[in-house]
Length: 232
Image 1 (tube, helix red, strand yellow):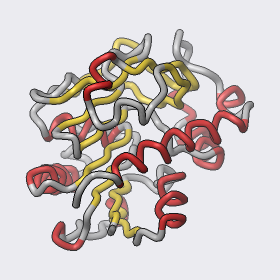
Image 2 (cartoon, one colour):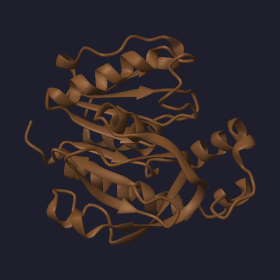
Image 3 (cartoon, one colour):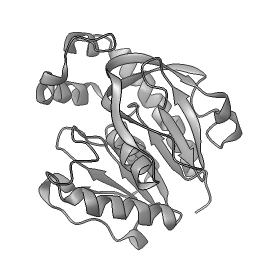
């Protein structure tokens, strides 16, 4: 199984997704869009993973490659590929499927609870995520659910935390792949986003408990295992 990921900035890589792929023996390749690398030939990949980033889906005038990236995501969905989006990646999937992406009512940065929706039970991913779990968040925008998508998860600050579309496309607003090193880099590169707010935690709090990273990475492995069960 060939996995290819799209990376938007140097400091938001695949994290534990790479660990899972290497352990399972799946080839893992990348397009580093911030370095001008070419998008993949979809006939040469089985999964497309779209990572996070500090930009908005609407920033095509600043990042012209966003337009081609959206086309790539749409083509991957139409081709029946497994497509997984995280944070910005989830927003890009939502917009590609015709949903609105817009500023959240509050920023959500830190460790906050997520609740699985009752609708999740009817999908292949019904038990891939616990009914209640803590996730890492770093976002200021959200999305409406695309037509035909199944709502998977929500939080107090953000109603639409995850969805699945056609059982092969999964969008996660929250982060399960993040490692401690990844949060350290986020704290260095995006410190200006740490502002006062009911769902914003200081960088020290983000790094205080190493066990949190092990827990979310385990949840990500469970979700990836479910994706790997889908027929080719």
